[in-house]
Length: 452
Ligand code: ATP
Image (cartoon, rainbow, N blue to C red; front, side, top):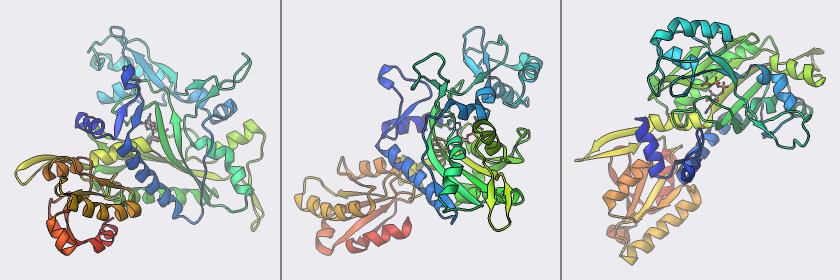
């Protein structure tokens, strides 16, 4: 199924392989017209859900920061994945993923010695995913931070990194946001932006990329209220996916078994991707670790002063963190359907109308009849103005247009025919059922609004 989704995305202009004309560049993809629209609908839905909180603020911090940020955060010393190289074909793999595939429990956070021990115990079962050899080298931790030479002119300049997550930009601006005077504890800072990771083996299309986008929210609270906030955010985020129209049977919580030393609680929201259950979003109660670390490294007081209680403390943080790309993949996988409509087989993306790149397509029944074309233009223009995501489609016969719109997930196809010239009604064809009904042109806007 993954190959079918990848192929549809390229064929219809959602997503193209990065640097394709130069043979590709692993872990990168470029977004075409429909991909941009789908992605925007997803980021809009997330922003709207965050904005519904009275005490939510938004931020757009830099991709480049002082290198000290990543020392304080622990990424320079500890942000790594266990790499193992096949001695025969030199394929690089994640040791924890290989171990998981044979049912061994191995955490990405294990020490080098521990993961090597587990790897050795399972060597007879492990095979290189590329050449099938059982001959592997030692497992070693490989740092995921991508480095840069931006602004580095002298050898002694501090190392610069591309950000490995957007969250650090939020922590280092927490004081700025607080000092604006618009918020008091508890409050959240939400941000959408690019992140970069030197993933050992980027794979599964949008699931694991080297350049990707995150939607992260950090919620700053009183230590006594943080656990309740964690539970509330966990449930809210699950409810959000259900309301978005994602199949609830393919969503589940997975509590973290081995918490990092500073975390108080953590779980993943998992989705059943075509290649199995995997993390979609992380919800983490991180204690006061992040602000304490930045206080220690920067020397800036990160405490919050509560005017009412006269209490001073470092806020605890609950984080929700999800990838835009991973969400797009989930939405596509959830929507991809092959079915039979009438007597023909078709591919259809049953996307929730709110997320579909195009809400409707407008067509004249015949493109060589000027009276139909000009009437269809009259229908198209105001809809385009109102909804934006409206496409003009007069290519090929009507059956072909329906198939094409099905493949890109357009919920409604509006066709102007000879009856339209008589009575100002059009045919509206439903993507999922193929059913058609006549609707007055003047009612079209309301018809669509009610169904989005
Ligand atoms: P994984 O275990 O899959 O590597 P992670 O636990 O390292 O993920 P986090 O650091 O918690 O992930 O990142 C938060 C979210 O960002 C993830 O839940 C995922 O949706 C997204 N994400 C992380 N790494 C990638 C990547 N390489 N490509 C696409 N999305 C990613």
